[in-house]
Length: 405
Image 1: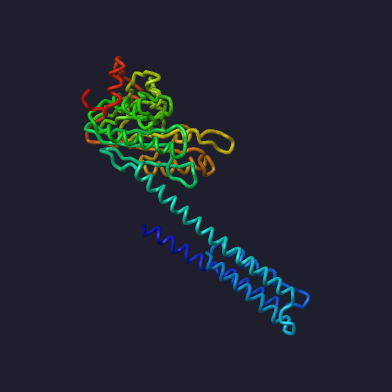
Image 2: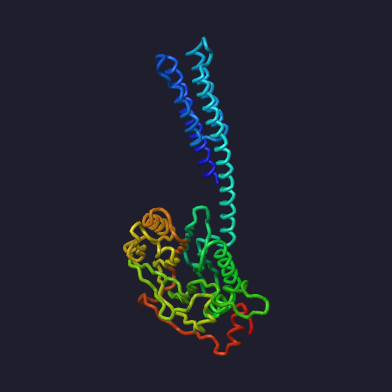
């Protein structure tokens, strides 16, 4: 906060210093015009002073500079035509300066009102982001974590991408997802899923049961009285993971979402799921069996989770961001340092502006006293089938995991 206030003070001092430019211009034009030959008239150049003042000044500053320009033009007329007081030419120039000055003051007032409204919108957006999508803590059990959210909308800080984490007795449970669509509808769907995850993730439930619960939660607010299903109206791609504390292993259910990446010694490996599930919200249509896949995540590795706003980011030629290729050889082991470099590289690729929201999570498993079992970075899997009885499936989906059926 103090750093922000200091920046604002420096900006205010710089703007006050810039006011000297139009005032100096008025003085120079006035002196030259008074001393110039009778056939030379520089008075019209005075309009440049109030014209440039809105670049760094507010309505009062603009009004002050405009008034000084009118006074200067009047002075020039009196000094050059003392017998006739002011010629019609000088009177026209004075009236023109007054009209231009008044217009610029009105413009500055409207601009400041717009700036205040924009500041209020950004404040509300930041508040909504902190409530709906707060930054992940830097430490989750033994894990070091860094998170980043880049909104495509210039005046918004939140959209349809989401992430959340919760500690469980066995480790850390994580979710990253992307809501279909954009705007406030996507924000509402993201908030609904995040709330369901926070309620259910702490319960003693398997990963498959949690995914079934989240699948049903996607359309809670879309079910009308008397209806029993709303599947297909909206969906959310997501990856839900359990990162175990006492094992160098990550369990995962991938629901139509881009695969995680494990970066080990500068070599990235895409952890594709052999048995992906449909996006959340489409489970009833596909009747999936939720397979829990797993892969190795060793001390010193970085685990990268992201949304498709990263891999579908295009440069000026339409080329997608080649994630694995770009991060190959990166040796940062600190999540924050990695994320700073990643953000800079991604924005450089797209020319500074994303066309879609992007969320990124970087996780480090630091070295621990317990010896970790070595193993290749390959996907293994176990299956967790839904109950074959449709009534049992509905019962599982309708109750938070961990409750009795």
